[in-house]
Length: 438
Image (cartoon, rainbow, N blue to C red; front, side, top):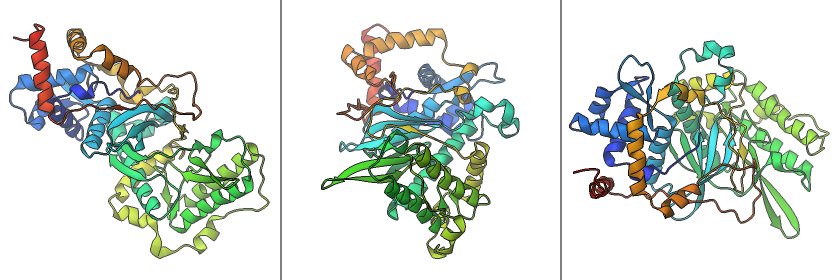
């Protein structure tokens, strides 16, 4: 699904409270009853809550399920996106959102910027996107899975990735700098680079191959295994030193990372090694004359006192969380997110995703009357200039990845005023002036 932020600037403080109430109620309810939403939002009068629910449903932040046994709403991935973006905005982590620069099997990557103008990357986890394609073959795993539980797993994946990225960056591993984490999203450093899979040739493939194998061993010595170390999850940053071209490999994507104490640790380690070896033989025509590295040899030189897997677990990512996510990783074969990333930027063509995890075919938003009213109201709120700016947010393109060349990332500020109640008053005044309210 595409991330459309055009409605974020028009949500009032009451709308945000109701949206947060739906999120809170989703922890214990697949479908949050309307009276519970009213109670959690803490708003006086039922009419105000129903108006907010209508506003949120019009822009598909919450949805109603067809043939439900009672009146209630569920949070959509769009609503979760808005809540995460609002948290980042309040924390001054992000100020504007630009084009989609990458898409993975279960994540979307956008360019964004901080209030100071620093270019950053926003990653949104969307677990369950491809798992439903094999729903018939995997009934045992998916029996009790609904949209809410996929969102829960997406939160766990983002929390785990941020936790590992934070300690790896601190310890000097070549990873992007983590900036912020909220719900299913991570804000990280933007690195002007390309995925290894896009590189046709390198000056010294043996040197790059050796550096990648050293990274695998260095992780194992600190108690970690990447689990999906391949050409999709390795960025190559190009630099120069005199007349020489210097290539620096950067690791990304850590939700499937496991401890060296994991029951299948050796299998994951060997798979990482074999993935790199196979790619270099097939694409770069380089064959190493040395066997290995081997999991047992890496553990011999490991330092038990400096294990990072123990530190991450102690920092808040508990064993229970790890078990839930590990079960999903094993279910998907460990390939959680082979990303198509344009490290240098540009749009990507969104892959065909069967968003069955979002249950769109079972959802009905606001009725036709409400949608018509929304369209008429939007015509008063958006002028031609704003409409032109919003069109710049499109992610549709004929190419999978654009080359880097003075890229315009289409960064646009959220334009959310600090005084959200002022927005409601402004809308009310405009509606009154046009005859919508008395």
